[in-house]
Image 1 (cartoon, rainbow, N blue to C red):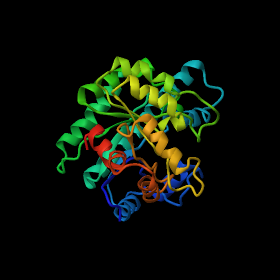
Image 2 (image 1 turned 90 degrees about the vertical axis):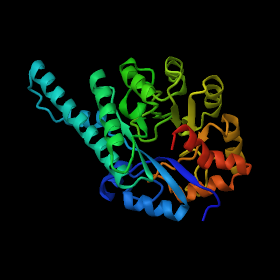
Image 3 (image 1 turned 180 degrees about the horizontal axis):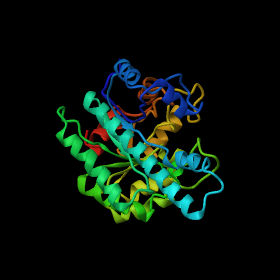
Image 4 (image 1 turned 45 degrees about the vertical axis):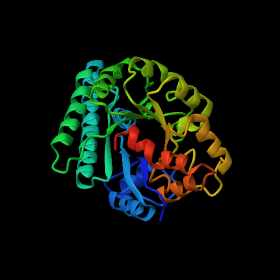
Length: 312
């Protein structure tokens, strides 16, 4: 068992193993399926007290797949109407996934719910979805509350400084809800993209100085960019999933390089995350515990930063 408490700040959960395996698209390094029961068992085995569910819905991918099936002989007006109907259907799926994530958290208080939003939603829809899930949490019998919001610029085809999301950022700031963004490259995308490049975050960090922003994956290893943002903006934080993990047999960073990267960005600014089920949270947290860091630095990364930053 680990010698200190652990919070996993980045996991994904699914209704069934089949859905989870499909979502991973063969890219995971484990045989896990992302079910709640499986995750809870791993948390027990690894001494992980809490895990943050950053569940999201691939609205754009689903929208494009549905639009591709529309009849070719539709008039422009018919196509526009059909596409709007598809958009509403996809947003409905996103809302149902948010509902499920929040329900799971009420059933299992160790799991913290982050909800998904999409820039195709209107300003009113964005704010209404935040308020709905916030209200559900504050009224929940177990006291489970909404933990924050998860956004994925590459998958959702937007930039962090997209003004369409300003209403969501403003409401999140008002409610003190952190937003976790995918940052850096995207391994599952159809090709290279700069949607999550660190250069797109300063506008948001400046415009919303009281909004807590977490850049997942340490910008996929762009440690200098992360360190620069950490120096300039006190409201930006990071998680280390994928970049520093114990699941890979031959990790890209040695223990010494991983420790140096954490110190470069700031061990008070980086949270442990596993990206389960793609990676193994037990092996990944054990790796962080083996790094040549001080005990205080390990406590910060494994537990204290998430507890403080995400108000857990």
